[in-house]
Length: 234
Image 1 (cartoon, helix red, strand yellow):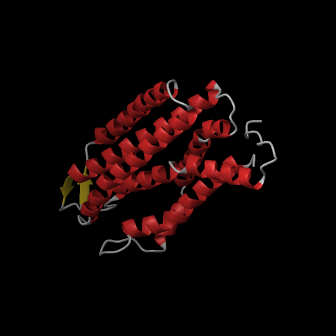
Image 2 (tube, rainbow, N blue to C red; image 1 turned 30 degrees about the vertical axis):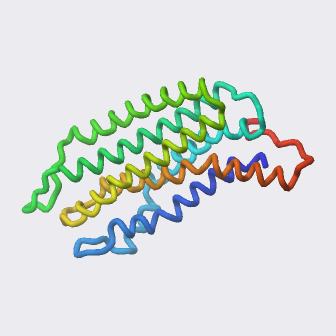
Image 3 (tube, helix red, strand yellow; image 1 turned 135 degrees about the horizontal axis):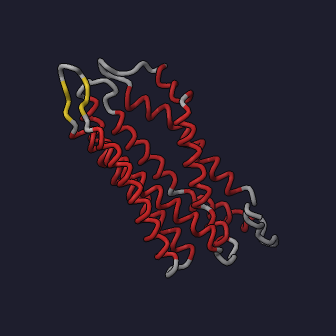
């Protein structure tokens, strides 16, 4: 049972990897300017893709730090609490970046003669800065909530906000991606695709604690006489 937090993280990363090609295929294959289906497998050879998976996996593990202790009725230490709120805040910041990227691609000037998108150079930097500020803001919000609520309530609220935020982000990114793909310029829909990918990743991310609590409940039903095992930190 002490490996189950790692199993949850492994399942999360496996889900992202399995969904990668279908999402890339659905986003970029098709139409006159669509990518070759075989070319879409090239994403698996890209180091930013694996770096992204690594960050998401570490964030999922940090999100599980408090559920691991709460599931075993142990006092919540300050360090895992900080990691948890940082991970949740990071996901909220990522959702904002996904929305802003999608909006930037939608409103950017399309040069039909050059078949390219003319987006202000500062816009991407501004989106990343705003995403960082959102990370800080939501980290503070989640931390303040954690001081007034029980650990399970804190995790439930964080996951609820993350799930709702991912839904709202996808409601923005998906329609704007459809519009961008119809323009036909080079790499059409890439920025909106980033928004779609982030929305799906955060939606799955929000299910991590619930899956872990299900594992714990199942273990206790199968081993009612055994003392719950310690967290992975021990």
